[in-house]
Amino acid sequence: MLRFVRRHLVSLVLGVLLIGGIVWALLPQPVLVDLAPVVRGTLVVTIDEEGETEVRDLYTVSAPITGRLLRVTLDPGDQVIGGETVVATLEPVDPGFLDRRLVAERQAALNAAEAAEALAQAELQRTIAVRDLARQTYDRTAALADRGTVSLAALDQAAAELRSRRAEVAAAQAALDVRRRQREGAEAALMEPTGVDTAGPEGEACCVPVRSPTDGVVLRVLAESETVIAAGSPVLEIGDPSDLQVVVDLLSMDAVRVAPTAPVTITDWGGPDVTATVRRVDPLGVTRVSALGIEEQRVDTVIDFAGDQAPAGLGHGYRVRVEIETDRREDALLVPLGALFREGGEWRVFRVDDSGRARTTTVVVAALNDSLAAIDAGLEAGDRLVLFPSSRVADGVQVVSRQDS
Image 1: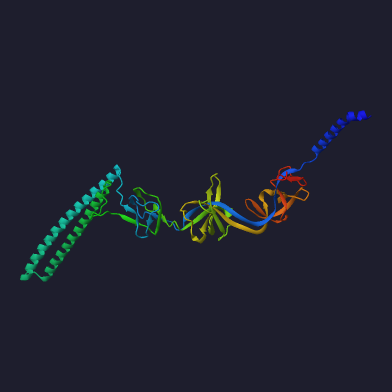
Image 2 (image 1 turned 45 degrees about the horizontal axis):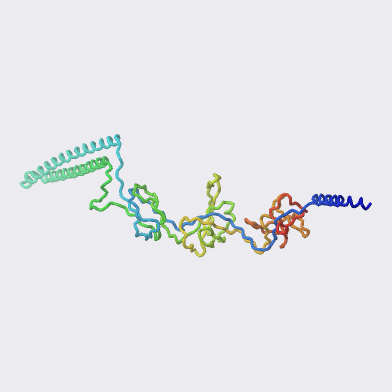
C-alpha cells in the first residue's frame, strides 16, 4: 500500500497543480487602468484663436485726382509729420492716343472751326467798313451843322448811327475771338501724347503734392513706382506702430460668449505672455470661407493691451494667439476630461470604490475646458476615477492602477 502511494504521489500532486492553474486562469483578472483623483481648484474656460495686431488709427493716403504718380521715395519705417511731409507727387497725364476715326472727327471739327473763324474775320471787316462810313457821315453832318446847313436832329441821328456801328465792330471782334478759341480747342484735341512737357508757363513743374494727414510712420507703400493712377487709388499707409490693438475673428457661436472687458492672455507672439482685455465685439457677423471651403459666420473682436501699451517688438500685421476668458470657477471639483464619457444623454465616470471595483457614476458638469471639467454633483474630493476607460471596464469590474501593478 505504501509502495502504491509513493508510486502515484507525484502524479497526484501534478494533477492538483494543473487543476488549480486552470481554475486560477478562469477566474476574472483585474483590469489595468490609469487613475486620477478628483481635486479642488480653479477652472478657467477660454476661447483660443489666432489674431492679428493692427494700428488703432490707420490712415490710407489716396490720390486726390487722376494723374501720373511720381516714384515714392519713402520707405516703410520712415517718420512723417502731419501737414508737412510730402508723401507723394502727382503730375498731369499725357493725352491718350487717337484712332483713325477719332482723328477724322476732330480734323473735321478743326476745319469747321477754321471756317467759322474766317467767317467771323470777314464779318469783322464788314462792320469796320460800315463803321468808317458812319464816322465820315458824322463828320460831314457835324461840319454842316456848324454852318447851320443841317438841323441838330440830323447831327444826333448821325452820332447814334456811328455809335451803333462801333458796337457792331466790338461784337464782331468778340465773335472772332470766340471762333479763334474754338479753333485752338480743336487743334488741342488733335494733340498726340509726347510724355515730355509738364512744365507751367514759368518753367515750374505743374504738380499736386500730397502731404501726410498725421504724424506717424510709413507702414506700407502700396504704389512705389511711377505710374498713372486714378483718383482714390491708395498710395501708402501711415500710422503709429506703438498704438496697437489685436483683432480676432471669432466664430459667431463663440462671440456670443465673450463680454466686453473680459480678460485675455496673448501668447505665441515671440515673447512672454501679455495680459489684455476685450474692448469691443462687433455687432455684425461676416461670412468667410475657411481653408476647408466651409462657410462660417465670423465676428471681429477688438482687444486692447493692458495699459494700452503693446510690448516692444510687435508691429502692424503681426500674428498672435489669444486666450479669451469666458468663465472662471473658483474652488471647484476638478475632473480630467479623459475620465468623462456620455451615456444616455448624461455625463458619467467610472469611480473606483474602496474594494477596487469600478462603479458607474452620473455627474453634473458645470463647465469644462480643453483638459478639465468642473463638477457640481456626483463626486467628492479625493475620489479616484478611471482615465480613458476601455471596453473592458464596466460597472463592478475589478481594476488596478498601472502604477501599482
